[in-house]
Picture 1 (spheres, rainbow, N blue to C red):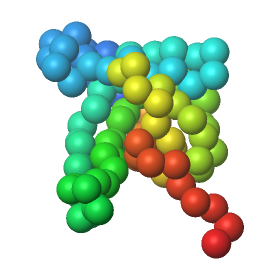
Picture 2: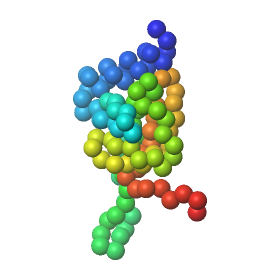
Picture 3: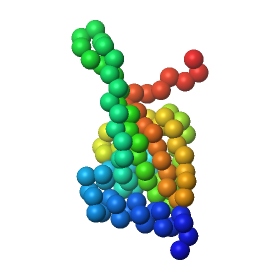
Length: 106
């Protein structure tokens, strides 16, 4: 078994054993069960109270989801988010996503 296949199997095993980490990831017509490994709620003072964005790190099998470009819309656990960064290592894609759409070209 290749290292990529072993890592994909490990992600599947973790999401089965620890369902609290499991999230459904949808990109275009592709759907996969991945795992959210980090959530960072960033707040800024706003006019009417606290405002900000939430950034999460999600891992999915690279065999099930193509690598989206920066700014692409993805659904994670039923919520639309935007790709801030995407990288692939050992058969696993790692997405850094934000619930705030990035501003490009400024």
